[in-house]
Image 1 (cartoon, rainbow, N blue to C red):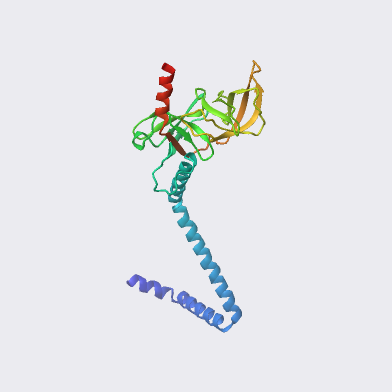
Image 2 (tube, rainbow, N blue to C red):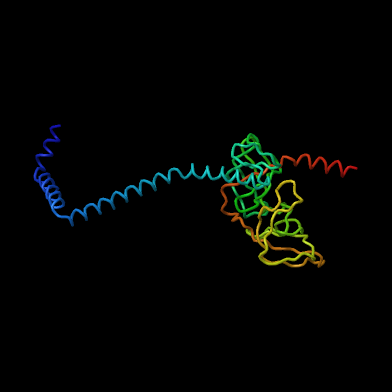
Length: 270
């Protein structure tokens, strides 16, 4: 305490100057309307700046929470989309064939011939082999292996990948593959020569798959050529997804898939 008193006594002139300065400012502001106006405008600006900064800081620390809310909301919207709008509220049990589970990517490769993606959801979350995986922009791949808490996805950028796809608004479908070259371009093959193909047309998932719902976007036609037999097109497709920059994904489960596969198997056995 004695040190505080000594500090004040040693700096009494400075403290007296500050007190007199504040007193003069108060007297000047109160006696002149112009100064009052300038003071209040300055105080409003300072207060506004502080509040804006406070809001920005608060919003920043709530970004993760807001992002999770938006992901969950998008999950519900996709449920409605894939099931023809059968869902009316977020608490309603899905009645359509498809379920949607959100997940996050923890590892992603795109520079090798056989690229895989690792997700932070697994068997305990209901993830199984051969489930489709998409992003808000389009198709990403198919679940290949699962553990209790994680899943690996065979990316569309995998030379073993083969996904049923079509030209949007037509019934011409083929196989979506990757030639191992560009990480942002895949190939759609076996589109018959009779199909009308135009650069810029959108490519989507086809109706012949038990993994993906129909009409999920994939990309747009970059260019096309007839194959060696001149019987079908090989189409170069620019992907909607930036395969080097992906974070949030949605896993699609077709509840009717097993029944479909078993029916097809018994039909082929006859």
